[in-house]
Image (tube, rainbow, N blue to C red; front, side):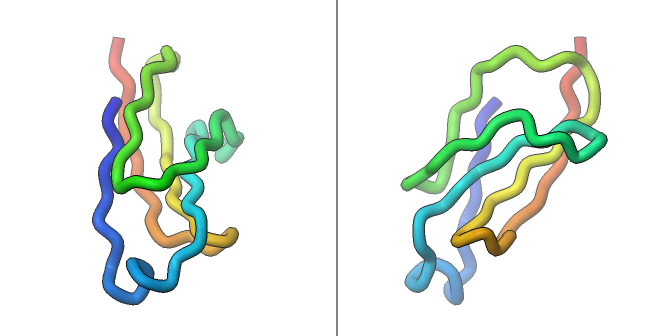
Amino acid sequence: IEFRWTLQAEYAENTGPLELRILDNKQKLLYTFQVSENQLAFDEKLEPGLYYWALLSENEMIYLGKFFVRE
């Protein structure tokens, strides 16, 4: 799974370290990654279902997305 994002101007210059979190559909945190670029390649196996990913800067959420894993 390839996660990509574009930061809005307000975050692009003033953002600290970015963190990408992957959560299941019950909001249980599964993975956390420190990221320094505008993408992340994720190659762990997930069970089929609905998942969410959140991009945070200094614990402030700047993006939330969802994705489905199929069999």
